[in-house]
Length: 458
Image 1 (cartoon, helix red, strand yellow):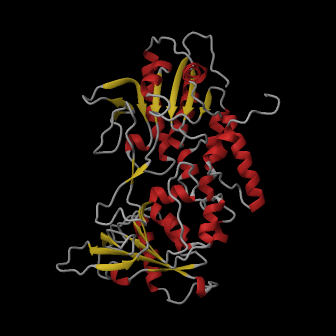
Image 2: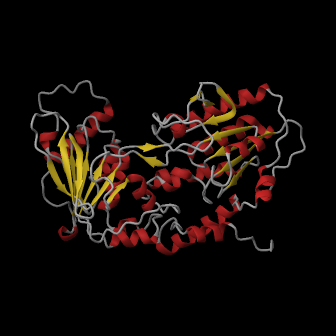
Image 3: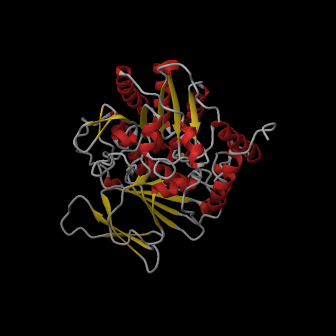
C-alpha cells in the first residue's frame, strides 16, 4: 500500500464511500478544488471500482460504458487512491471513519428494489430487476442465476429504461452479445434461452411512460424480434396532444408507428426463432399464480373501468423494474420513507435536523434514484462545495492513515493496482472472444488477481 503519509501541517483526509459515478465525481471535485491539501480515499466493498457503470449499464450500451475511461482517470490523480474489499458495517464502521478522516462522503447508490406487494410475488421465478441486471452484468455478489431454457414467456413490469434493458437483452440472440462484456455463463444461458414472448407492463399510458426515446427505438431495431402495440391503448384521434413535451411526442410517434406497422416478421429474421415484444399499457399486476413457481400473471385495468375484467398472461419469469431504493448504512441517519440520507446541501442531518459534522452524502443515496449518470456530477459538486466550505473553517486535529487501523484489525483490502490486473485479465479474455472484455464473476478469482504481488515484489 502506498500510504498517504504527509508531514505538511493542515493536510486533510477525506473518505468517499462508494466508487460509482457519484463517488468518483465527488473524488474528482475534491481533488481539483481541494488541491494538494486534500487526500482522498475511495472505499468500496468490491475489489473492482466504477459501480453502476460496470454493474448497472446494459452490456450492449457500449457508448455509456465508454465513460469508464473518464472515471478511470480519477485514480491517476496523485491525491486519490482506491481501497477495495472494505464494506461499511462489515469490515469498517462509520465511527472508524470519523477517527481517521476529517470528512466522509457516503455515495453507495441504490442497491435494492421496490416491491409490487401482490400475492405470489415470492414464488420462484419472480425477481427484481436488480437481481436480473446483476446477473447479466456479472456482479460478483449477485445471488441469482437464471436458467432460461424452460422459460417461454416473460413479464417485465415497469415503464422506465431498466425495463427496456431487460426486455432487449432477453430479445437478443446470444451471438448479438458475444462482442460485449457479458460473462461466458450469461452468454451460454442466452444461447439456450427458450424465451419467445416478452411482455412489458406499464401502469399508465404511452404518453406517461418514462422511456427515453433512443432506448425505446432500439427495440424496433432488433434482428430477432418484433414489437407489438395495440392501437386501442394509444390516445384517440380527437385527443388534444398539443401540450406534450418533445420526448413524449417522440415516444408516442414510435408507439404509433409500431401499432400501424404490418404484422409480418422483421426483415431478415428467422421466423422459427423470432421473439415477440408486446407492450401492455394501463395495466397493473394484481397476482402471480403457479403451483410451485410462476406460471401466470394477472393484470388489472388501471383506468378504473367499472367491472373491467382481469387479463391473464402466461409468464414463467416475472421481473419487476418499478424503481430502485437505497439501503440504510450502519451508523448513518436514514429516512426510510423517502429512501435517502437526510441532508442539507449534502450535509448529513441527524433525527433532529441538525448537521452531523464531517458527514456528507452524494448521488442516489442523497436525492433518490433519479436523473442520468451525468446528473451525479452537479450533485457531487454541491456536496463537495459544502464539505470544503466546512473544512475551511478549521482548525483540524491530525488524522492517521486508515491503513493503520486495517493493519491492526488484520483486514485484507485491495488497491487500484489490483483492479488493473483484473482489468488486464478481462481484456485478454475479450480479445479471445472478440469483444472489449469478458467480465470475471467469481469472487475468489477476482481476489486472487487483485492481491497477486507484482513480479519482483515477492
